[in-house]
Length: 363
Image (cartoon, rainbow, N blue to C red; front, side, top):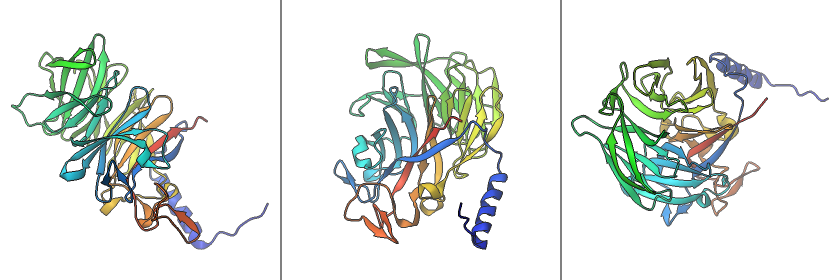
């Protein structure tokens, strides 16, 4: 076997990498993932006739359809100065324009959820909008009491016995709002506040900056607080536990693991769901994926996260971008070229807001 002599610079780089890993709690040995870019905004292409050179940007909300075939991604900066939500086919990564099957202009989509019938719930500031699975028809606008400050940045839907319950986390009031959705076939007949002693509103002690919210298979409510906590709350609100997780943005539950995206810390915390013990932090292989960790103007963050049952999770890289103002992703076009012996699909333009896929590798 041939041996290669490592340069001093290479050795220093390796030592720095090892030191950075040792500075973090190691993730559980079973949490091994294969990372890839599932989707991104190809700046040199248009989608449904609209150029992507300037928008959409700032992908925060992320949800997965009940059949696991589609992602829904919400962008804070869409065309015409409004938000944008996209329906994206999973499994098409060589040409993101083919993966984009529907676009909804208007809602911010800071958080998105799907119910078991495929309806899409979009957190839109002071209300939650409900659309059909193709984002073509609005089914309902869910309003909440107007006597409190409202800024919903988390939304979750759960089937609870005969009820379809919707939970929304209010960033301004540090509260959770719960309503029961009244169904009439595929349509929404109405909603009514319910739970938490009747009025459907629950204020979380010690919370200050609530973001993503999920409901697990036991009916427990998980809420990320960007100020440095993840709360786990019983359905009746009487049992509250918390884990200290810096810069928490969103949470996804998979089996007995909770995965927490950590904003501009650009890590994913792994928590044991029962004990709330921190098992470690997953670091993104930025160099391998040819993405820049700091993102666009140093605003890159890890935001929306959704679990793939038994397989891993999807993760939005809000304001993320490809490295060195180039991209190995996207569609081959007139901007494609070979630079330094390597083929780039965009040789002079970065691509933006990648959605990452972390597939669990069983040891």
